[in-house]
Length: 486
Image (cartoon, rainbow, N blue to C red; front, top):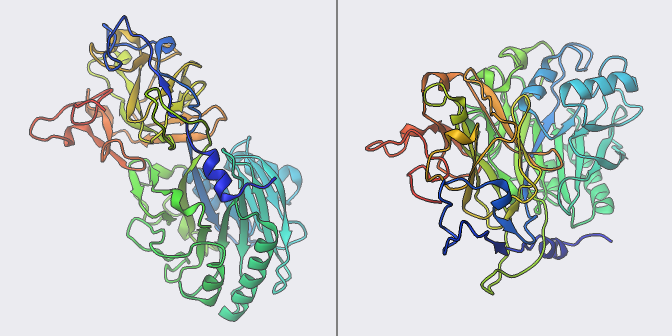
């Protein structure tokens, strides 16, 4: 049975019922326990609280270099490693001798051993798709205008009840009329094969001279193609080598478009998506191992395009404890981190996680990690909307009065002062949120990094002392940046 849009909406209706534990005989659910610590077995437990969101990063990448239209030289590979897409739509997907072993090695090293991929067969410069999540069906649709590639497609089982259809496209350079013919052919294939209730992304090298070409108008029959567009740090949205034309696109349908969120990499935020030009990206360390020279490599004719989306994972049920009803979707983010603890007691390191959505999130089995897993949430742990839970390095350093605080299950957080990446993953291993920070916090004892605006998905991080400058706080675990409760 295919899911219709109305069925999906009903499916993601979320049960907001929340059973608050009895905390040491407290008469009010808002009262913290005497020592300010909520142990995992006493955490918020919600019925039907499995409505979550997952960040989905889509990347269009015709970023081969050299003379063989392949990824062997390594420049494009480094860019993809630095940006870390969940799904990449690749053009000129050649590597090594294109054997199954060579292609598998390319995917393993560039993306990860758990990624799946599809690459069209029998093409000189094939299109392909690489995905963090399982590809349940794939193939190619004929592009009658060209002989050395077709349209590669993959149906991907992303988290939640709705599948994503990804189509990797490489239109001809010859003229706009031919490109429109190709677009018309692809639209016919999409209308014939893609269920209306599924998500759709078309991405790749369109070779378009302008945003108003006829092929873009044609594509608007099945996807949204309107401003604002992804851009680099300087606001430049063009994507060819000389940065004068909009060659490359990531376009999604009307079902997925409302879920777009800012692309956040390290301390940088790109509200409308990112055009990756390493020649202007700063600090380049945020997308390591990419080098500043990679986008200017010989034979590199395109810039990659990146867009992020927060997709609902699903849920069900109705009602709340007081008899009311409610629907919504949880949105769990890393909101505040203290890397360089006051003094030298590393137990004082913490990571604050906030549910900025409108439904309870079940965190059981989720993990916090950097180079290794530092904390695994107990099966009973749930997080109500507008609520924080703070993971400290050790129980002994949790300040008195901090509500919703627990100690890292591994016994330590071990966050590196010299730069690190903190990642929150759900039970399927998908990244829910992450923060990559540079070495700068090492010189700021006891001062945390906090999203600005506070508790805002996709916002960048700033030092906590930039809030309330008349009476700044060095940190605010379990509370808003102002010091007030969530």
